[in-house]
Image (tube, rainbow, N blue to C red):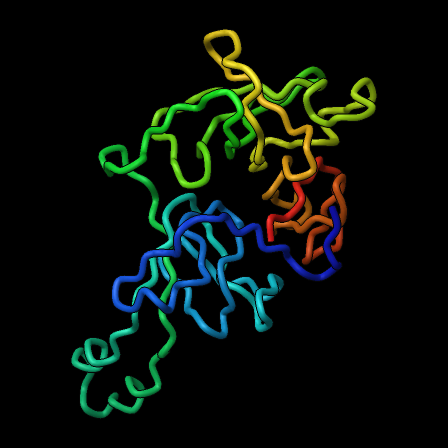
Length: 248
């Protein structure tokens, strides 16, 4: 896996376009769901809404990017300058005219009673998104967040990534602290229903591994340099991870 220095890879997820409240066609290039730290779109075309933020270091078509800060569904809202204008005094109308004309992108957290495909149960061979809770020399304990492409898990399922399941080669040389850190978001595959308490997961594929990690030096989201290291765009610090190849 490789990524040019100074840019954040877009880990967009396949699926139907993001939902738009007013103009569905404007959201045709956006993912349906997002994970924290995932670049969604260019800041030149969209404005950040709840559940997102602007990152000048992330590059999606130039000019920085709108990045997800929470896990959830991507929603696009058309700007309504007339509404904003009505709440201003007459001498502020010029300010209203200069209001941001860009559609607003938001990420809405899943809810337990949201219906649809919420509450999916992991099964063998499913690809899941997980958050690392803790690590030790033998394994990483994780919480499963998303099952499949778009199905958020409302019930908390536990998982384990054992050292021998981190990568396909040199399994005896794996050091867990050089592959994952608590708080990392990982794309993994379910390989076993486990021991009744935790699913057994694997990252032993090029497209599996860390998809989002925070720099210990600055607290900024990092981008991958290759399959085993990530760089902080603020401090330039390089940290070791078992990285997933970007999906786009």
